[in-house]
Image 1 (cartoon, rainbow, N blue to C red):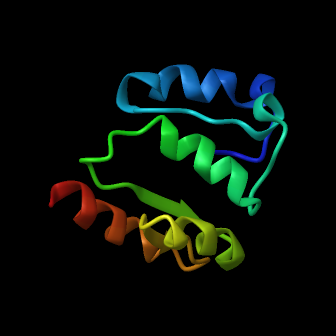
Image 2: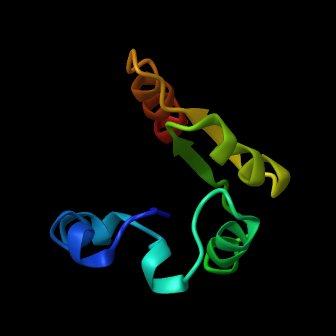
Image 3: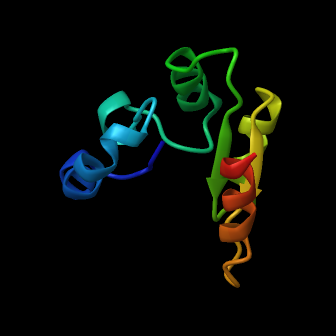
Length: 91
């Protein structure tokens, strides 16, 4: 989920697409974070039996994800979030 335009993200997303379950870009769906609607759009695209990890640099963007039961990590400016994501991925 990104609050960007798809044409800006496309080159990066094309490389990541094989590793992603879903991709929701605000310009394509007409709503942006932290509006709960964009989180619900994403939630419909995911497997309810698999955990969802949502990482964002804005704390207010984590709240709707928490409300949906997603696991969240704040992308802090000191980059400590990277090791937390690594731990999540490794299980």
